[in-house]
Length: 148
Image (cartoon, rainbow, N blue to C red; front, side, top):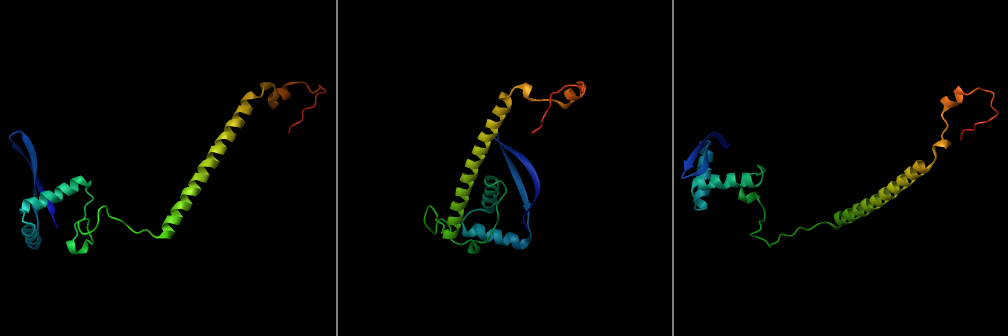
């Protein structure tokens, strides 16, 4: 397990770099030293590469042994290709068509709501009869009010 235990700031001719100290167990240290020797780089460079990868990928880096990686871009063609099952493609196309249909329905409903709002706005206020107004009038009127 690699664990950051200390952080200090060093000034180098105006260029401020941060130094991170790692504390690892003896087996991990030997493994890291072997990796550095295989790649013909210093142990510090191994850690710098790791930290650079962490920064470049927002901390979403997983350390995996090379034999478990599978084919890399260097081994295969560029750009890499992926085989996608036809059922996945058909399902994707079906969902795209359904989404398009739903968008069209939404546009129709929005148009209908706008039309209804225009009708309500265009109606005259005289068409609206408030029940309170009917209660205030005397019951002697011959006018019949019909709801519906």
